[in-house]
Amino acid sequence: MVNKKPSRCTVKTKAGKPCTAPPMSGQPFCVMHSPLAKAIQIKGGQRRAIFDPKELKPFTPPQSAQELGALIAQTIIEIRETKIDTRSANAIACLASSFLASLNHGEIEMRLEQLEKQFAEREARANGGIAR
Ligand SMILES: [Zn+2]
Image (cartoon, rainbow, N blue to C red):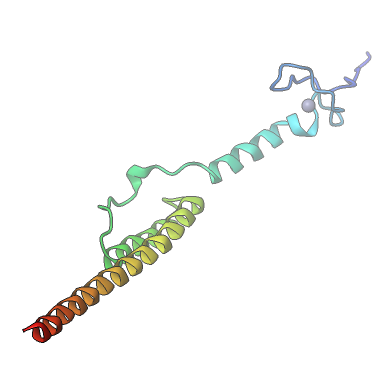
């Protein structure tokens, strides 16, 4: 009885071509096409699985730093409970920084506008006083 070992992996690639890698000893497939490799790939995929947004606490768009703080605090909890993936959490953190910068910018714009208005009013009063 001759147990002929295949010289090449017997699995076809995703492209439909036969795999050219040498098989593992006593196996008809290479390391990459072994059941263990498949199991590792599946496990890796599960770790990176896209989170289910239904699992997350719903929030309305934040209007203030305080509201954003509540959303960030909840996101921290959801990371710890693995309800959200770290990639999405990183995106939220990045957007939160932009949001805070935007809030600061908006507040400075508002204060400057008020000062310009006050200055214009004083100037108008002073000019009005001189003219009369
Ligand atoms: Zn193979």
